[in-house]
Image (cartoon, rainbow, N blue to C red; front, side):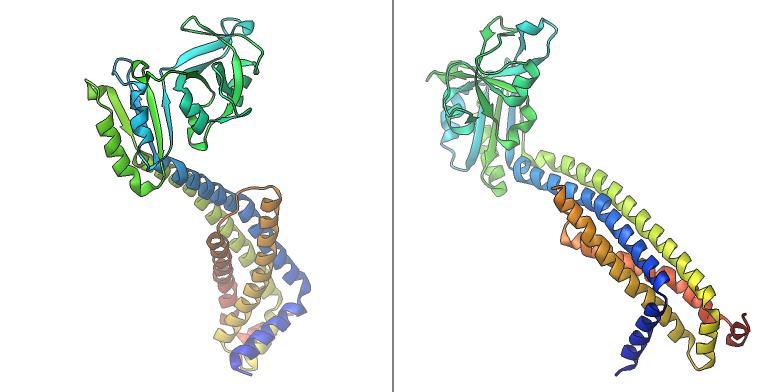
Length: 367
């Protein structure tokens, strides 16, 4: 048996000899790790999930907006449909506010936009799998207006009367348009229909630049300054902002919890060291070096904290799983365990060094 193995075995024997203190250190480490996973871990999981959603959609999305007098029409649709790199597309007309007449003129309003009927059939999920000439509204739009398919009368700022015919579900990358109502246009002469917004989702992010260049060529209007084009690259600043804000909060909370736990552990170890002064003095008088005594105390603390950390981390992750909350990455879990063990070792080293530097003869005289 090597010296390291003998040292570790003796340290673990000392752990078993003080069950109350050992249980207290395990409990503190377990509570700390559980809190970290339920707070900072949850935050890290939410951040990763949010950024994944942004990466999945917005970095593949191109949004073209046209002013009312820009001259952009839905006639660009056939050319868009010929671009094989496009995964999903929406060509929307100018927005018209509509409200429920049964709720009076001050009732909530939502945007109603025209859309080519052929796009409804392929790029919008219709509850009954049919597209009629009536108004199509999302569940959020119906809830806002207080109507449902076949009930309620809606009036728009254009003076027209509408009735909800079908419930539709928008693709995930169009969630920012909610609440939204769409009026399908059944005509082949799309060049006469004004377009206010074109939203394109490319199949792969590396195809974004090529599709953007193609769109710029297709959108031929008299005054290009009345057209704005935003690509997924425009969302880089948004992504960095989200990552920075969420990360700052999570990192600050993690540091506070780690340092707080380390301080509590250090205080407990100091109390134990003071209570075991005679034992440490006897070990020193029998030949134990200062380094051996410091390693002895730190080994005990790290072993106990490691056991508590594993228990607390497991409990925290189980709670997150039961709540169906976003889970932190394995690298985060491992990093928390390493940081907590390092903090425990550092804070335990202070009282351990204090005990090692005491005069063994004076320690043996302690009553």
